[in-house]
Image 1: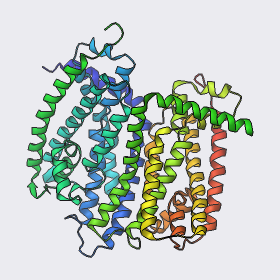
Image 2 (image 1 turned 90 degrees about the horizontal axis):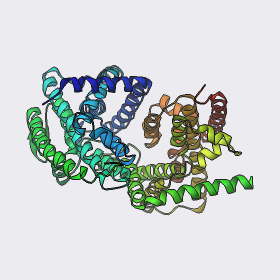
Image 3 (image 1 turned 90 degrees about the vertical axis):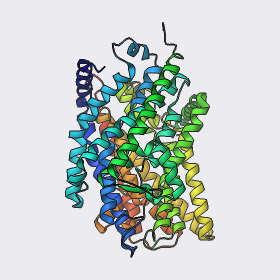
Image 4 (image 1 turned 60 degrees about the vertical axis):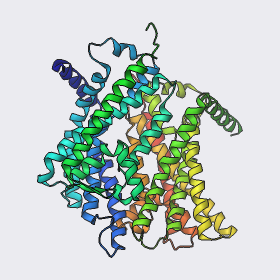
Length: 271
Length: 260
């Protein structure tokens, strides 16, 4: 059962903390367009030397739409639960969370709901508008708006599940930042944050289809672009969402089992 | 001068010793750094597999440029770029005052105690990429390698200047972790051939924030490509370095601690 009073309190708490450092959030309005500018320059020159006009099925406009959406979506799905868990566990402060009148995972989830809700207004919408103005590209068609919104919400939750599972590894290790960084950075490739995944060979496409990382970025972006062919299989926007939902069920089960097993390892002071 | 050198070495030795307490984590972090830096190389290989690639640049030439960038980034990251997180963390925790009390140069102490052992992974990834690319491109003469090495030093100076500017910003504005994202965005501009960029962007990256000196300049010189105004670009780098020092000193003078 969801206790809405808890949700409201955590969101308010998250907003208060984030607004304290609002200038930091606005940095996205500088970095986002610069990242996109670099990709614009690189892809413009690559397409200029490519007489076919398409690369792995993407035209230049579609490629830029892909990058604009990837960067915009990254602000909505961003998650730092793993780092926070590591900090709380290694400093012995995790026991404070265990005494709260809500499950630990709900505590982090509601907090995320707050700061990503804020990011929607402070980072997502302005970046989409700025990118549209600079590059003259509207990456999202109205007909794909509903599947895109649904897919982004699921993507954000999947990323939370992955981060939470990674965070529980701290119960076993004294310092897990190396491991988590390794997973986070390698997962960014499989999420399609650096390049569209259809550019990869077929065997690699099967691999990323089996891993959950593409669900956090590539899937919502392609839902906005009207679907994609992965490993020779056509996925319409609603099929992408269906696949995400199946994975959410699997990850939910894994997350709960992982947490229950790992929290028994926790030996904080006085616990 | 000698004592400053000894203090620096001692501080670095302590940083290495403290990091070696978590050896597995260190190895994983170094591997992660190497993988993360290699992303741009993977991206380039994929681009060349799926298309004609960057106009005017063969795949080994593009890899030489990117390998050079990774190498400089790795050396700088290990040796002095830790000054950024070290300053941000100390300012945030109110510990900068302790560094100011030490009878040594504050900037030097921030650099020495910011030594980043795990960034060696980056440097190794850079060496591997440059070695592979140069093996493909054929042998180069001793003079070409000397010029390449000298220009690597110029690139390191630019990186150091960026680190010092960010350290100065951290002193002026508390909690500036996201500066790293701005830096990453700047780095991206240096990871690709400057010939791809539009003339205005190229001028900015040559003279205002001379990012192109980090990799484009040494790689082009090794490949015997013509780089216009190379002397002026190096002069701009010297000015950039001096300005960064000036900015840092004005920032530390403006520092008013927690009660300011």
